[in-house]
Image (cartoon, rainbow, N blue to C red; front, side):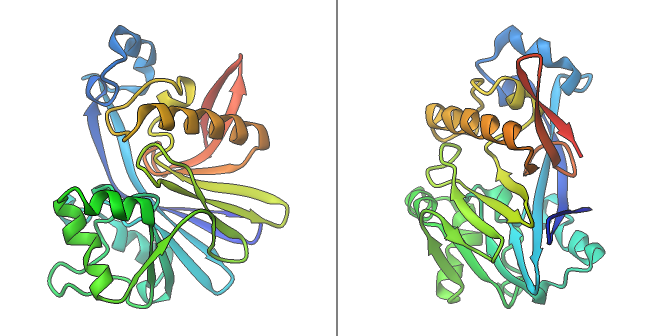
Length: 262
């Protein structure tokens, strides 16, 4: 868990878990070029991916961005929230950057089926709701579909004001309706980027396809646009899978973009 601020907004990075994956599987078209990024890999050629979530406190309103992998992966999101002093009852809304299972795992209590965030509305990008609902996806059925029957589902499209300082922004490609959260407060800017960028490798080589993107062409274009924008304006960035705790900035150096951890 790490805490910082964007203007008057508290940004709390929460680490559910960290797992390492073979880089050749994450970037299947990279070939030998992946060796140029060996400084981001372990001795077995794996890239470590953080599974992070973010709590945004804007005055009396608390927004939780994503809910991690969940208890089956020994996830620590609930413990991280406790350590940060964020009561589950205080969460006003949960917004999903997208509906991959590693972002929805702590939605519901496995034993009771009740929401882990009892006073929150769950904000779901409509395009992802339609897409994953049509896939017969077991994790969608377990973690997301019950929200409708529980009366907690709020489908969102386009830009959506979340708090006085936080706005949901469509950033498609990783999934059909992937969404980021822009923070603007007291002259400072930040963004919770979700999976637009998976690892520091993507920051340096945004055209490199990864195996998790729904549409590589759209995802690559979104990635390039966001990297140009964020490296230019100095925004604080929270990335779901960037090295834990997932906070930092994109910077330009030597004609390339790089990830600079906070």
